[in-house]
Every structure is written in C-alpha cells, then in structure tokens.
Image 1 (spheres, rainbow, N blue to C red):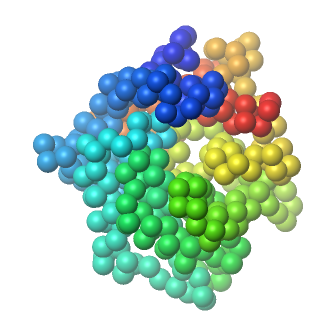
Image 2: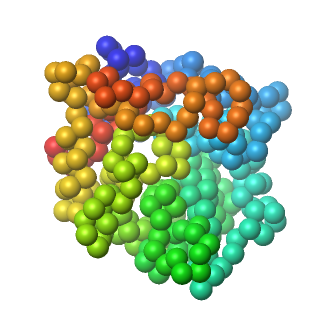
Length: 318
C-alpha cells in the first residue's frame, strides 16, 4: 500500500474528506466508501459475522467483538446507513444497557467509577455509521451524568482518586462531539467542551504539575487506537471538536511534526506506527486481530497513522 497509499481504497475516503475537503455526500466520497466496503481489510473485520448477522463473541472481545469492529469501520470512513451492521450494533446496545453491565457501575466519594470509554465509543460509532437511535441518546445521557467535576471520566476504584483518566476520557469526548453536533443539545456541547479541556489543560500529553510526559505510551504513534490513548488520538478528537486552534495544542502539533519521516524513511513525509496493541492471528483471543494494520517501524510509513497525522496538520494550517 505504501507506494500508492493515497489511492489505496482502505485510505481513500479519508484522503477525499480530510485532505481534499470534499463534502461527505459528494459522488467521489460515496464511490470511495463503496470501494472501501469491498476491500480485504473490511472483509477481514467482518469475517466472523454469521448467517444471522451476528458476531458470535462478546461485543467487547479484544479485538474480534462487534464493539471493536464497528469502531474500526467508523474510523476508516465506512459509508453510513449500512443496515447490514444493525445487528452488530444491537449486540453492543444489549451489552451496554443490560442489568449485568449496569450492576457494575459504582459510585465512590460522589464520583461514578466507570469505563466510560465503552459508552463513548458506542455513541461515536453509532452516529458515525448513521445507525443511531434512542439507545444512543441513553448512552450519551449516561456520559453526562457520570462526568467528573474536572470534566472527564475514570474507572479508578480507589476512593482517593479524583483526577480523570486520558484513556477513559478521549472516547467519551469523541462520542459527545458527534452527539452534540447531531442533537444540538446544549448540555452535551458544554460537557464536550469540559472534556476537551481535560486534554487541553495538559497540552494533550503533559502533566499539569511539572510539564513532564504523563505516560511514555502517550507519545508513541499507533493505529488502531482501540481504547489506548496517544497524543495523535487526542489531536484528532480535538480537531473533530473544532478546537485545534487552541494554543495549548501547539506542543502536541510540534511533537507530531517531529515524527515525520525524513529522507531516511520511506516514503519521506509519512509517519510511522511506533507501537501497536494487537497481534495478527486468526485465533479469537484477547488482543488478537485478523487485520494487519501495518506493524511498527521507525523508518517505514504507516498509511493509517499518516492520513490521521496529515489530517490534523492540515486542519491546524501546518
């Protein structure tokens, strides 16, 4: 894919939307999305869907479950409104709205301790894939109720924990970006802005106290993100929120530009995947994936990382 990566069907919808700035309903984008549907990558993602339209694993099975499959499809720019995905989304709603799931929601010291990335991701992909319904609103309203005083979310069950987690905040933020835009709900808009500030106050990867890197993994580029935060994921969701002009993004944008491959890499101007959170394998075990998303390298461009990086830099006017 690397030599002609801008034309690769797995990447083309994002190229047209974010680099060429074509409208989502343009004929070119729709044709590119139709070609994406027919790629081996998409067929691999959906290869476990059975005759009943379901994926026969728990939706949260990493990374074979419906939750992760839908999140990957949405992030690739899969065409909205494909009813063949409806039953997969139903699997996710059934899980997230079940009594068993709700029984695990606990409140300590006035703060709900939940992996809100799960609900946030579902709100995101249901809207991005054009399949949202009243259950999407139910999940979005949960995010509003569970939001911590500092603007984010956290699943830390230590009573003394009072600061939001990046890993549990960036996906609820993404979900609320899409939900606020679709619903026009001012409460969702305010919650989205408060969540964005959790990242912006820390310049997307630095501690507020001393400016040190919060977690080394936060500055290593990777794709897919699944639930794992890195600063490019942060920049991407901040761009989706329309807040990339905030001066607190400057350090993260500088860091991103510093990772661009020079003439010692191939192709020059691309961006590498420096980490990954999957193992390529057909066995549906935790952390395995049927899809090879390009591996890791310090010298070779990863097209999935590169298109996201170029999109962010273009939006920032760099």
